[in-house]
Image (cartoon, rainbow, N blue to C red; front, side):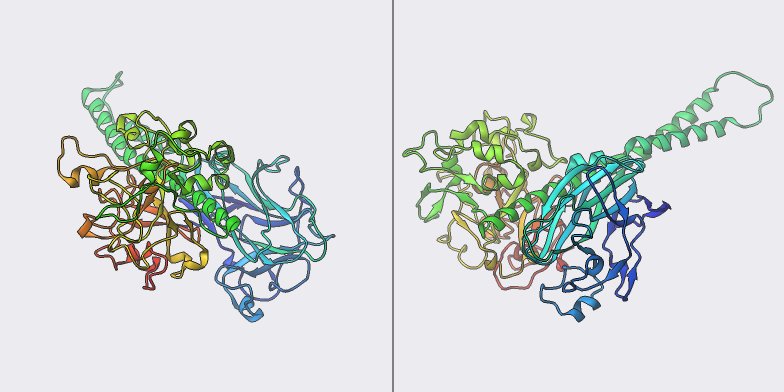
Length: 582
């Protein structure tokens, strides 16, 4: 929910509610200058130690205009790169942009927001940066924050060198930056060109759009406010006429005070718990967003999505002809010849784009997951949902889901979508009860797969149902069998695998509804192949366009042609979109 923020002094916004979203659509489409929303300004002369000088008015322009300066322009969202001038001018989806010049903002151009986050904990934040006119000269932009009324030092959250391609780059804020910007009377967030452009020729036009931050009141502030109210109530209770002064409380007064305090604590605890879960869920969605951006970064560098698993170990039976077994390959105690076995996951291939290059470079490609035990046990905090855990929990038997039960790290709560097919074998008689299926399985043939396939990298063009309508990533269930159970539903159907390095069901899920293979469909359904979370009421999913959405666990999954299963496949040609999801 977006809550408006109002200025308390010139240029300063006080955040309130649970989130602040600025789309710049209020700039309008009228010609002439536009007034920026409260708290925002544009500046020239920005440096690493100074905000710079407030710039001139923001003038309405279109992408093809060559005039230097700050502009009120149409957003790239919803328009193509060759949209007509008329379409750009008429678009109510606006953005704030700039075309720099040698005597205007190159370097020194900056977009700024000044806000007050007192008694608030920031839990998530993001902004869209847009390249709207691709030119040979390139500018690198720094996303930074500074603290105080007039800061003289700034901390960099991220840098963005325009990608050379028209369109939008979403950037999320790190947890460290969010923490630093929390509970501050004056925070300056800025997107600034602090170094001169490179190359020669005309300069690009860039813009910002869809700035958003989420926050929760600090529990200490809530407790102080309510505790203060409790004291007031107690004092009021004592201010009744007395025949004569006396010392201390009567037993009745003491019992009343205790009852009032107990009532207030009872009211406070659910509010604090709800606020904490809201913060944890936002943190989880931010984790998923960063993983999604990592996958898209891999795709941008390789023109394909990472393969679901790199695997050569297979088996051939009447029930699973041509199946792959990445989990069994990951557990092999020896590899011969060297480099012939892996059993690794898509997450390993994505590590350089998740700021985990050191882990990626340490991986020995001549052996499998078990042969890389020291590296595969590394805890990557980005891969843990804060509602569920911050690492492997031996008290909850998490280690029993890993490649080796002696391991004490290397889990993941996020996985890739394999499609709306029966993707894994759940029979105890096979080499391993969960085997990654191939298209030779009856019922798995067809256009039901998603963006992750074994040993293959899917090209973006293969996603024919639309990037925004195809699930790419999501939260995973982490299940253990019921102690003493003997039925399939309570034993191997309820056994998860875990580990970011291992391919197969440890890092993949399906959206299938398939009662013939014991899969009831949906999420949080206690079936190993389906997604789910420890958040109440649903789970978060990232689409192939990088957007992250919360889906209710009661989403339609009644059969394999319902909304949720269809969102999991990339080219079935059937109509399904998030607009149909609760």
